[in-house]
Image (cartoon, rainbow, N blue to C red; front, top):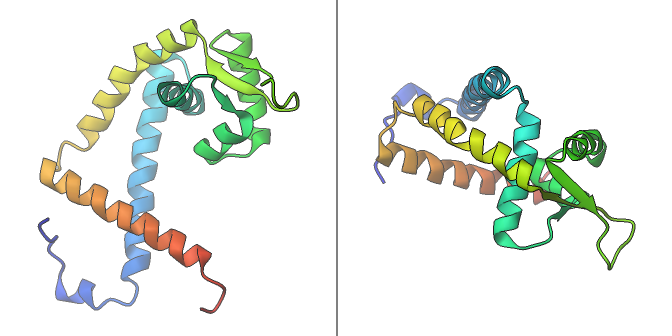
Length: 167
């Protein structure tokens, strides 16, 4: 893995972590804003709807039966309350189905329908192309390095959150 050049001033900057975090937020916001606009313009849908369909598709590849609302909210990092109305609308449009699992009648399993899979399959190639275009300024090696560094950052954040206050 090649090192990213860092100026001596940045290397000794006590606020380097804050500056990196702000840059990460700015990049995330730019990508998300573009994806939201393109999903709306080209497919008449929203990013949360796309995300729900994509998570259900990923789960279907891992196992049959769908995801509980709690599993889906955890994967999407949103509350169950935020998800309930969205899943309800997707069910009304027959893009997802809800069912109670036999072992827990209080829970709801959510899964893609054939129509939901077709809708996601229509959007996915365009979504991938948009992301590819926005990351086109990076070489494959730089993308690999960025992915690895973001993985290390995620681990660092998790570790910091698991440590007791003041430790």
